[in-house]
Length: 281
Image 1: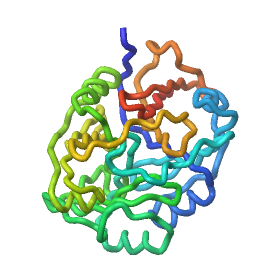
Image 2: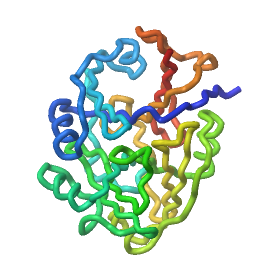
Image 3: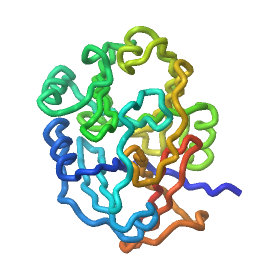
Image 4: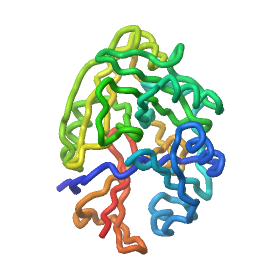
């Protein structure tokens, strides 16, 4: 029987970085996060991720959290030719109530644009702009016409590219108890400019846990079709992790005990995206 854990919430997104101080300075200065001091993570968690040591910084924006992690030994860098439809693509959508001001603030720091010609106006009055941080991680600034008070000034969702939305919906429902919240197909000039892709047709699926903010977004690019997963180790810069707080890990034989009484388990979804499950007291 397939092991199952009920996700209480998406606790944070963990991004691997090569230069922890530089990455922290970017997220604080360019994007308005608040940072805690860097700490050495639990050795058992480092072993779970296949490295000798793991050092992390927790970042907060609004009510939501992001984690920066650096490893010894370090993993391979983010592929420089990555595209939005590649199956290792994963981004965090950062909510702003003034995307023009947020874009101007970002422009004072080194970054790589994904979207063409700055922020794009999408159907429904949403404004969005995709870009990459100095280490290659995709991010998105997003402004809603009707903001969700739970994610105001924080993180609305983390989006991942998938090969088969139906397969991924079934996986996240069966393994984590996530439920389908909405689904639509995005296409047209604004979506093409947002993703820097031509002829885009993308199935956008929102999945939520019992506590719905932030949520997980699945992106199945029907056209163009992206490249397959990289198959790189968990220490790869591109191997971002969705970290879920779960009710229990009793059915996971490979769960490890952490020093604070918690348990953790690392699994992968059908497209190779890393999922770290944590049961805390």
